[in-house]
Length: 202
Image (cartoon, rainbow, N blue to C red; front, side):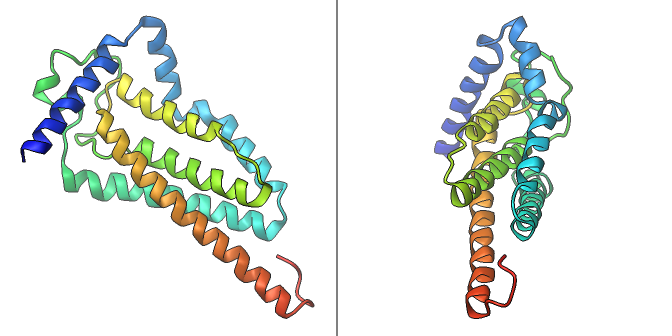
């Protein structure tokens, strides 16, 4: 129990540093922008365009597993784990009353793990390894994208750093599972083609 108390203490120190000590008025606007879902519409449109460039069977697999990855991370983080751990958001935590700057509304009561972190690290992981598998390209910017959203969640006071770590871990695990499923799905169709060349190549 002492370890978890110590971890909670360190987490709150890190939160205070990011949320308060690292704050600046010009950063407030940027961080609010980073965590806004509409900010990233161009990235989602780019991914749709990229998917369209694939052959249709592969593109449909990629799209279906992208949606499944998001559904799994969002439901697991927001619908299961938050109510299992019941960790209060910083704005509901009495220890943080003198720290919270109130630049955004509080939202739901519980914060662990962060659904934003889970969703975006899940997509970043699945996309990164799938693009690497299909095109041999390393889209490192995906990790920066997910990390910046997670950092913004702490900066605006929505989450503690460990909420982001927990959500990110869930997202990475889910994204890797979706990638392995994608890899197996594509390989299965390709093996079927080798056995019966009269079929169209997936």
